[in-house]
Each structure stands twice: as structure tokens, then as C-alpha cells.
Length: 430
Image 1: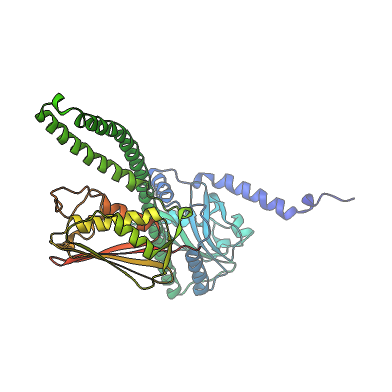
Image 2: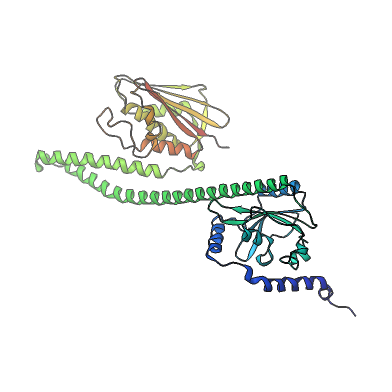
């Protein structure tokens, strides 16, 4: 007569029975005191439970096994009802019920090093399934993993299936490895906190961008209506409006135009995305000729372009390139204090980037303002050569366009001699 194989596996059935019996007998060992509750809360804050394998932790259990000449080494975290292994060396399971965890005793003992030389002769462990069956833990040595505020999260421990002792050097090494585990945990927690802050700032920035887009769109429409109304009034029969009223309309019209420029600038800043599908081949000599002709003539203005190869082409978004150069050239003109304005534009490239510079002979920028001038609404000068205060949107827009390509922009300046903006645009595969 044949029987199902599961009935013939008597040892396995007996093992399961002993686990259930042992859990029942020792179920009251788990401490639910306020201290234990806070300990588990501290463990949960590290968010380490059920995470994937990591080489840094595996290296530590390997070292513990080699140094102590033990077949099994573990980094164990003791949860409410289980012990979970972040790293195992010589053991195939990932967790066990807490009721028969040796590490629970390490935590409750509060000893710097908890050792069981022969679990078969210890009333606390001789009937433990971990002792009598897999992995036959006869010898155990565990060092607690302790936080700065005294909470014990778990242990680093070694297990052997024979009675033995540890040398003083091995004991010291285990304690050192315990401290290294805690350093890894603390570093991991700080990284998680930084990621959380980064995510919060990114979400907040997205909210601000959405708010700015909605507000500027809502402002732009009535502004356009105001400007149209002003134009109609100013172009009407002069006799129908007293001169003082016309002057007030002109004043209002100038204010509305300035506000519209500000709104357009904000919209342009937040719309800057790197859309590679809009990239086109641009012949630089033709581009700079076109750029030069689009700049409003200024008495005493001289712009020189330096291109190493007349037939040099770059692959980029034409509109974005206009925004970059027109902003930089406009600043070089507006904030120049010289009678003769000189601007120099140059180009070179390497395997990964197109490099450009825009250099002028203006008043220069104080070194303390090098970073702040790229902040939104921040200007280094109170007013330009025409007596108009800048919006502080141009340079942040330029910086955002460039950085969206994977490039960067820097400024170098000497007071009284001029300023040079150097920027790079990352090449993309064509």
C-alpha cells in the first residue's frame, strides 16, 4: 500500500508541531511596554524592513563570518512579531517568528555582547526549533544595533552548529561591525530625508509654476484690452480729449506695456522646456547675420562675431537660441555705461557641447552678485541706461533654457571693464 508523500515526512510534521508548541509556550515573552513600543517605532522610522539586498550590508555579514570563523552571519531587525534579516551569510531564509528569535534575548538583555556557548544546555533555548532543527544554532553571539537615543533595532550576529567561544579580537570586531551597520542605517535615513525634501520642493515648484501660469494668463487678457483701449483713445480726435487727459493715458499706457513685458517674461520663463523634436540645423554665419539685423540700431554700438569655421552648423532649437542671445545682448546694451558699446560673441565646441560667450565693455558686475543675478526677479543694477528698472526675468530664463539642455552658464566680470557670459549647450545625437 502506498501513502501520500507528505504523510511519510514525519520529521517535517514534527518540526511544524514543535514550532507551533514553542510559539504557544513562549508567546508571552514579547514585551509590549512603552519602551518596546517606542523601540518598534524607531525601527519603522528607518524604513529598512523588507528592503532589497544591498552589497554594503552583505559585505558586513561576510566579514563577520570570516573574522569569527562562523558558518552563519546575520544582520537582523526585530519587528513586532518577527525578526527580519537584512543580510544573511550561510542562511537561506529571510525571516523567522519573533517568539523563538535569539536576537530578542539580545535586545532584552541590553548587554553589549550577548553570547550562548551551547544552546542545548540552556533552558531558554534547548527546545527552540532553531536549536533542534534548521539551522541547528548551538552557538550564538549577537551585538545590538543601537540608535543614538538608545533604541535597539536588532543585532548583527553569528551562529555555529557546535559549541565554541570567541577570542577578544573577534568580540571587538563584532562590536565594530555593529557600529558600521548603524552608520549605514543613519546615512540611509539621511538620504531618505533629503529625497523627501527634494520631492516636497519639486511638488511645491510645480504648484508655483501652475499658479504663475494661471495668474499671468488671467492678467494678460485684460492688459491687452487696456492697451487697445489706450491706442484707440490716443489715436482719436485730439480735440475730443484735453491734453492733461491724454498725458494720463500715455502714462497709463506705458505702465501697462511694462506690466505686459513682465507677464510675457514670466510666461516665457515657465514655458521653457527642452523639446528636442524642434531642433534644426543652424548655419552659424547666417544665424548671426540674422541676429545682428534684428537688433535695434544703437548709436555707437559695435558687435563682432568670432566663428572659427564659416560653414559651422549646430543642431538646436532656433527660438531658444534667439531667447538666449537676445537676452544677453539686450543686457549688454541696456546696462552699458559707455558712449561706444562693444559686444563680442564667440563660439567653439568639443565632442559633447557647443560653447559660446557674449562679452561687453560695460560697467561690470560685482562678484558678490554672480549667483544672485540668475535668481528670478533679481537685478544687479537698479536702472538701465534709459532709466528703466529691469524685471529680473531675462537671465533666469537664459539659465533655465541652457540647463534644460544639460548645459551650464557662468559669468566673469571686472568692474569698470566689462562682463563676459560663457555658456554651453549639450549636443544631442542626430
